[in-house]
Length: 181
Image 1 (cartoon, rainbow, N blue to C red):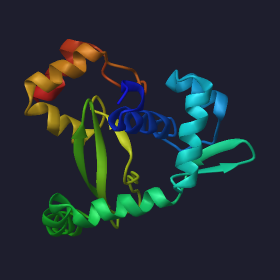
Image 2 (image 1 turned 135 degrees about the vertical axis):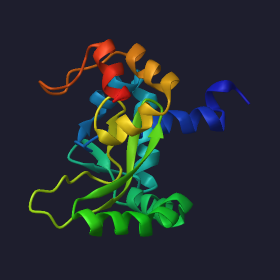
Image 3 (image 1 turned 180 degrees about the vertical axis):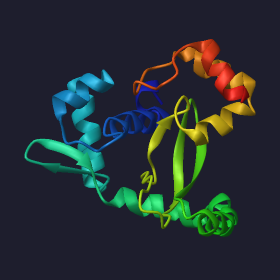
Image 4 (image 1 turned 30 degrees about the horizontal axis):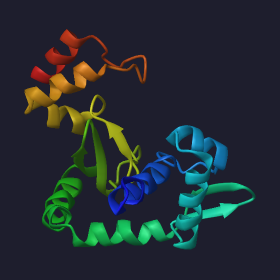
């Protein structure tokens, strides 16, 4: 089988197209998807047509966005996850004790993904979205992950520290010191 039509390559290309819609599923034109993936226009169009036919992508007025069927997979992952099943009672106890929103995040490359959120009862709530992809450079959950993995922290630093807010630590030495606290 030629390499260009191998199942693995096709799946990889389909994932590249679906990833164009992250993080907020903004509707995109075919040309925007083609430019983002670098695929030839015919390849981008063929993959989009297949994804539309399977209900994973919706086409409306020459624009595309992820379809609701993706949520079926996301819910199945959540329900079938041992990590979620085992963690949920502990997170409920923590939430009830402090009244704050609690989350469960897993690492994915140099990011973390929120896989469970339990809303707190306090008046001001942190309200992350399940499925949200957050750079490991930011947030308390990331700090916990990095504080116990020096090699990973160095990978994040080597990737470059980006200023997301005026308080984001972008100096490598200050970042290391913050993790050591």
